Length: 249
Image (tube, rainbow, N blue to C red; front, side, top):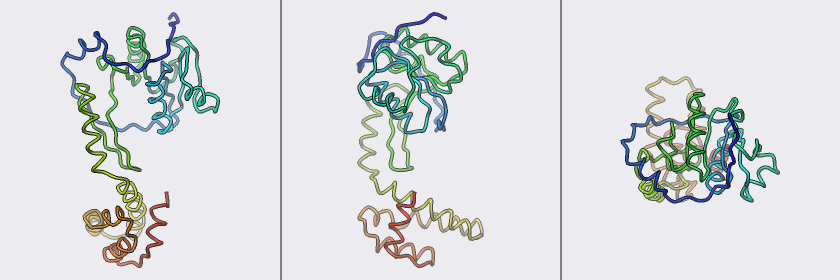
């Protein structure tokens, strides 16, 4: 396999070829969340779009390798700090060895398509920016509130619509959801350790979720939160206990 020059990625608008290809019938996607911790991720491209992809991959614990002639300042800093590894300035099939996931994010659609073809032939997950027909997975628009992840997808038909829906949901789901989930996760472990019946556990979990606790957390009313926990769990809780539970993770 020859070597191919990788140009610095620009923030891309639509291009005529992508627009035409996107009018084809889209497949129905299977929604899934993937564990990328310590998995090799190869990103082809070194511009702003690649940077955003890499930031997300690093957040998920992936082992990020990059192929690009030029890098943004932020990516240069990541390289200097050892957060990512530079494989080379030109793409080679050999760089995909042992990769779990591949992202092609250059402004060269032909190169992106070739990277996709090779990766798919090797059975790898591959995403090509702005070329959905060359992907075997697409990336949804995501809202993250602690451990709460809400993914929005239009199956590639309208990323603008997905962004608009995400913006609306972002206003509806505030940071209190992340705090509430942290609290619920800690309480769940303690409740399950008590050896109660499945029916009793289910009753308690649903009562917690349906209680006014979420609203109390939103107001940072720790006294009211503690009072509701005492009522549901028949245990003593202080406002300080609530704060410690939320900060536990």
